[in-house]
Amino acid sequence: MDLSSKSKLSRLIGCQLTSLTYICLALVTMVLFLRAVLLHSFSGYGVIEWNNLDLILSHSLLLNSHDEGIRRDKYLEVPQIVWGLNNQKIAFARACLTARMLNRTLLMPSLSASLFYKEIDRLQPISFDKVFQFDKFNSLCKGFVQLGLYSDLKNQTGIYDLQKGSGRKWTVERDMEHLKQSSRGHVDEHEVIRIVGKNPFLWHDHWPVEDYARVFECLVLVDEISKEADKVVSKIRQIGKKHRSKTEMIQSDFDANTESSSTATAPYIAVHMRVEIDWMIHCKKLEQRSGVNQICSSKQEIIERVGNIVSSESPTVVYLAVADSLLNDSSILSGWKKGLLPFEKKKLGVDGIYKKHPYLIQSAIDYEVCSRADIFVGNSFSTFSSLVVLERTQKMKRMGITRSCDIDVRWPSYAYNILGESNGPQKWMTNMSDSTLQAISYGSNAITC
Image (cartoon, rainbow, N blue to C red; front, top):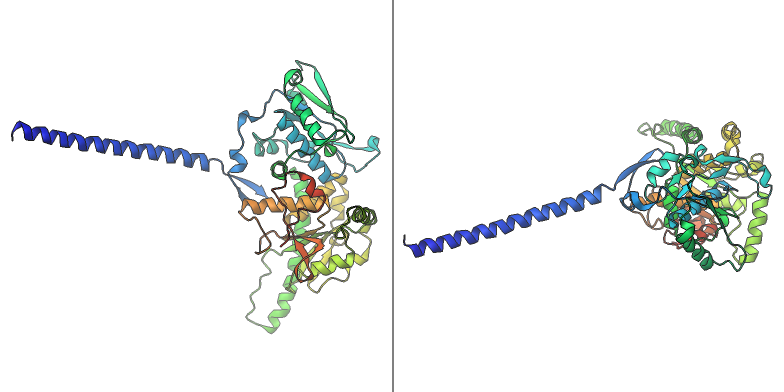
């Protein structure tokens, strides 16, 4: 072979080797890129225990969190959080989101165990960690919002008292500008900013519903309270199972091939029945002011509409979450459709569980019972009902469900004060795209089918 031929062969082999090298490098680069993307995507997934079910959280809950997001050496202190359970949950979330905006850790606030609206001296303070799990909250909300302890303070600087404005002139825009000014300059140099004035529930709302939902997801009841709710739910399902077993035994006498399902978990319906006198007075006034006539519902209207949800005559327990003033009102237990078995805490035989605890804990137990129900029915103008539906909507959202109107879903919710299909209550999901939580209190977050 002459030199010319050898030279051509060398160039050919060289070109092939170069091309092969580039291909290999490209493949390695692609593999490394895909590995980085996949690790980034899947490392954000976690599992959270929710109503005794393991639900896979979408990666957004954790990927949006980062350790450097919230400062651990700057704190926000807020007034004692008061009023009902769900007003307190909203107030707490609002305080958390305010601290987040200021890039500060929220000092663990004091809640109120009793329900007094005016007698401030009769309020019974209760520590946040006596109701909700402190470490669990910080773990689930890591990087988004953060709770701190007073023992964490170094007391190297004085406390800056930040007075919240009030009155008509103190607008939403003015309040936000006030917060922005407090996030920089000499105010931000203080270790602790202490907001004084009205309680956080009455602060202007600057935060979208999704942010509130993030905070609510991190609120996990302490084991003592959760176990009390377990007892109530267990009793409800036991009664349902017992009645279903009796029905199946009767049916089996006529059909020897009937397969018993009594070993299965008996489903139940929870109804937040607002018909007590003070509520009816409040909602009538609200209807007059707003010009809306779908706020108040009579006992009979609620009973009839709930009866149109379930078409099967299989015995199903209906747990009535009612005010204590209605526990001796037998009319709430009569007139129900065949197959629906109404029980409130007294008839259920669990009122002793509730009586051991102050008002706040009693409400937390009832909230859990309603939240875990197979079907929940409430009033869309009630804060209690609205937060239950928000939590159930968030569960469905994590499973990729954004509407419940056209499909059967696992945790359906209904608003009995709004007429829906077949003379039943309106199907209800929270509008998670709302820019503030105000809709939660005024019923406009019920999605119409």
